[in-house]
Length: 292
Image 1 (cartoon, rainbow, N blue to C red):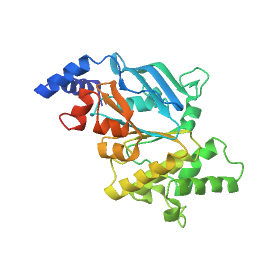
Image 2: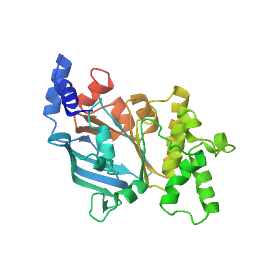
Image 3: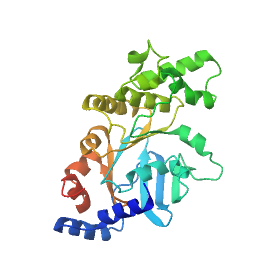
């Protein structure tokens, strides 16, 4: 997206056009700190005072948020609110954008994510990412999953690599469906299977955190249900942060929900509390469909 188009979208999003939007804009302007509880007792990742800029335009404003061990946190909000931008900060994917600048503090088990001695490539092995559209490599099913362990030297021989591939496919709930055709192209799978293959590829390098950016938006309801079941299973071994436009999905898969609006983290709390008793007017308006 070019700068002019992005500027126009942001302008339209910020322009009140109804009494509800006028009230929401006033509530947003008066927001000085996030409502709810941004910290957890057992954090895997911690962020504080995070700001993100694309050239001179600020996209994220002073976000503070913990991601807990063995939990799913869902990030919701209108398009353009900054939730995906924030997610990409967690494994430094924004480093690939020349105009992007990130300030503030972000850590994984207390280690500074943006420290000079931290290799972003190694960080992305520890903090895996699953994207909106399935993106299997132009390789076999086996080689898709084996790719990460090979380049990171996680297997010393073919037998160990086989074990990693099989275990990862099993964790992704895909092995029984593909065990007799591991040499087939990853692109030959259905959309839902391709997404589970990408999840298997992500967990093959033994990450500690899995980031998911709208992982079900391109899938049908049956494939979506399977991915959601998988997310619930993976939570036993990983910390998971998911961006979703589906509030129903957030309610089904997450333990905590964070609501973003125009680059600010408005509210974060237990998922049930956010959806049944939101504490901020902006959150309530979004959840009830008054805007967004």
